[in-house]
Image 1 (tube, rainbow, N blue to C red):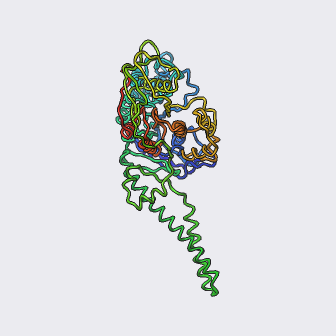
Image 2 (tube, helix red, strand yellow; image 1 turned 180 degrees about the vertical axis):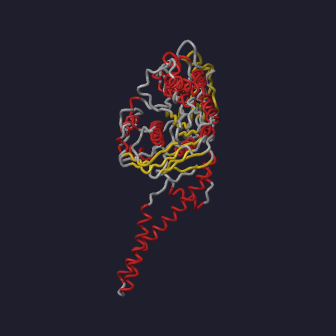
Image 3 (cartoon, rainbow, N blue to C red; image 1 turned 90 degrees about the horizontal axis):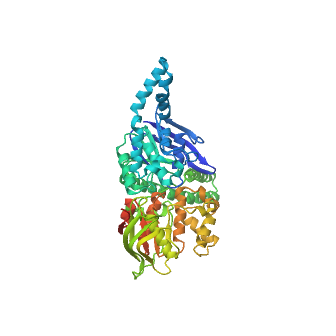
Length: 552
């Protein structure tokens, strides 16, 4: 065992994140950390790295354990060169490098310094640091960073590129334990393969926060954060689904029995009270009073237990027997409720068409000779590397539908959309104009921009549908929402005006597993057309459709 984590209590104001959480980590194991958005997974990482000490409990690491984590924010590092940033974060690199570079000029015959210099050389070599700069550059290149990016500063990189820098840092740290938060968000399929290859072959222990089912397929154990505690499941994602279904059905059955017992106790208390009041014999009165007291004591004990969170994947839920299925449907955890356009249509009108299309921003196009037709009910996937032009094509479609000038230059070919076409767009990032608004204001503004009147009652309904508290969460600033909460706002925006076409750019990023399944189910029932970008192989298998390669 390399780490023993016991959190008795961790709260934010009135919200209790952890209550009796226990987690042990072993050497060399790969652990997938999952849980509903807002359960505190990233907070747990901050507690493990020591940046958050405001909790009751203890976190113990094996003596001498080296821990590396992927930083989420880069404030204060904007002007640091990329390579220097990575090297400075490698365990013991800066100290060893300083000794090796400066001691030869100053140590002379000083025995202490000679020993320190010799030890530093040995340690530097053992960590593989003599060749680490070249190795880091190769890794960054494999993730898709150009030499100009690698030679530049952190501040010049996009959010996705900074993620690659963090992964390169983790991969070359040679630590005993790596903590990685959502590594594959915004990755293309090539970068994802690079990460998965490292993840599968590295000897260090890794804990990864992710709902990417491709990553969870390669873990040794899944730890689910639920109801303030950690639940451990041996094996990968497929094994988790089977074990979780069995565990949850057992918990649902136990909860159902408990609720039935509570109902019976309430009836017993009323009955014993009436019988006691009607009795005249002191002995009989005492007996019913005693029975009433015991029933009230048991009821008080049973009523203190909070309702657990129940979730089973859709395939396992479909295999439940009738009575258990009914009990699960009654008690299962709330999920987002997506109200997508589901009215069937007999038409197959052409909605979007591209013919031999070439787009770019300079003399050379990003891609050339792209042709497709999108009709009602069609599913079409755009597939290519980051930077190949998938988002550029989406923006060109939106510009054509909105009758505005596209940002990109059309080098050849044509793109056309149906008249008065309504498109719902799910982008990777929320528009900056919304970030300083409260959630309720942002919802109202997003509807207004689509010429849709929205009442306070409708806003509260939307908040409830997407797992927000209708009474309080509308006042939260959008910039303070978690990635999953922002994703749910994006879904509200996309579906606001009952669009004929949905365009989704990596929609599963940041969503938790139940929300991903709800989205997939809603999209399967949606009768409009879908144009999407995704490198989630599970999502692609569920949505299907023709694949259009983009880029060279």
